[in-house]
Image 1: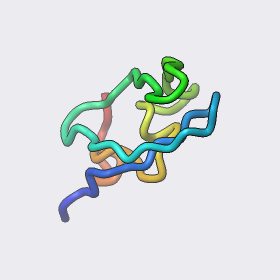
Image 2 (image 1 turned 90 degrees about the horizontal axis):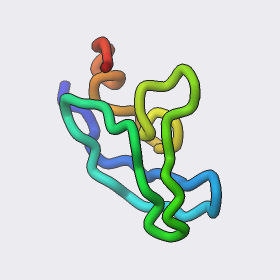
Image 3 (image 1 turned 135 degrees about the vertical axis):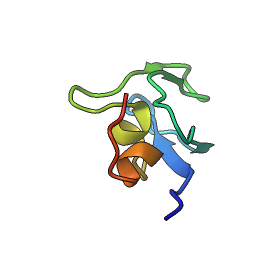
Image 4 (image 1 turned 60 degrees about the vertical axis):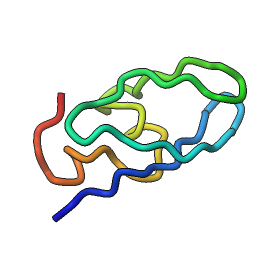
Length: 68
């Protein structure tokens, strides 16, 4: 099974949405909103910004593998 690599990330500060390509074999811990420039970090218990603010979890989580 091949993971989905695109995720629409939504900034919790301004609500801006952007489709981003996720790395296949790593977590992305930081993300800068392209609209308000807020620096996003994962919520407590999540491994990356895509798992916290994206509409699709990161590839390792999709494949039921350990992450980070």
